Image 1 (cartoon, rainbow, N blue to C red):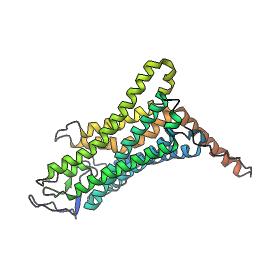
Image 2 (cartoon, rainbow, N blue to C red):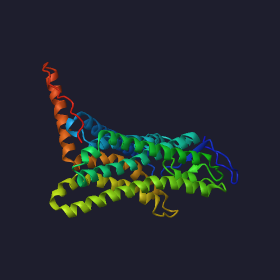
Image 3 (tube, rainbow, N blue to C red):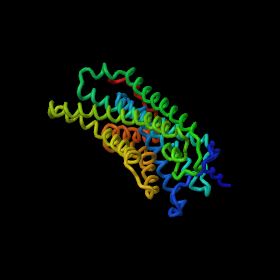
Image 4 (tube, rainbow, N blue to C red):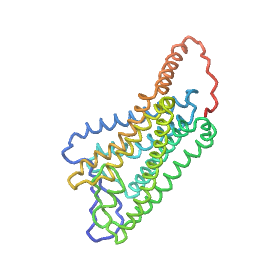
Length: 335
């Protein structure tokens, strides 16, 4: 049975929400399921490959790849918040989610998204130190500093999302328990609230989200502004260092650009299907594209992947003959 809609003017907490998903124009549910399954498979396998290669290859024990490994892990978590539920709903006529499940999904979606914002800013700061402060880089970007920056990204995302989820859960709902979206997302859930204090709560919610997103974006812009100034002043000597930023710049543009279009650009009431497509862009496609971007545009990552594949094939070929392969000792932290 479908959940009963809330009566107009009745302030209460619904026990269940109905997710509309795509409209009836998208009748090919199996095609959608196949597409989402392929996206999720590529996302998980691609990011797992990046994490594994960085963990195994001693030449990638540097701060830049340390951050990249955590970014790939975040992308797996980020896509796992929404895609499994979307896949399950592809087989279901009634796409329902409990109130607790909806708030939980909002919390983890904001947590991983906010953590990724801060981590991308930390990666930009790492490139700034490597290019603009090369002599002091090993001391400034030490192993302890890298761990502190990663911990900061997780803590800031967790703290901000906890407050946003708590404030959202306290809002009364009086219009409807129907969410015209693919998954529980804060702006769509806020539309169902009509408490007199709802505008104040909404302002607080957007303030927390904006602080994390805009603060991280501005720090990233500042880092690359200093990098470009250093490149223009020092000339050709720093151009090679700038090439290490291209993958990160592509990921930053994709992540923040998709989020800005979805949240900042006004949409008409008739563009609901476009809102869902934009949600897929920043919540589903971006985590899938990140490992592809880094593997295609980074020669060290491509070399490490080829080396890992070659080592795996070599071990498989020598395992049957009983020939032991010598494992290189793990390298020390670099930089």
